Length: 188
Image (spheres, rainbow, N blue to C red):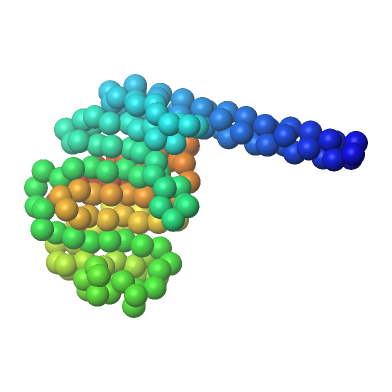
């Protein structure tokens, strides 16, 4: 019977440790988001258990922007959304390591950038190859490459979306993501 109590107490302590660690990690990450919001003149909304529904919203570089966390199929993502002021019919998606054959019918035609290094690294699907190539010039391609692996960058429904697995807490990486997403929105 004493062994059962010991195991039960250990289980409770372990569970308490996990909850505390998650809370502290979430709090640290969100304080970085709060600092970013202040630096960029945006609003930080803190919501939810462990800050999972927190977001940063406002106007940055003249564009509506939202930085948030969302969960899909039990996977947590950091997402940056920038509203478009120009063309709304253009759609394209950029992916790392994905089966294009499965997505072809959903996203449009496969597009090559004529940059063998980038064409090997990323897959692009879209509805206007000429326009997409204009937007994804050498400067944008280089910055996409510098970001490393991410899940997706998508232009659809009058918005530019960037998503990456997990919660981005590295401020320099987060700033790069936001600036890249805004630069793409400005080119459209």
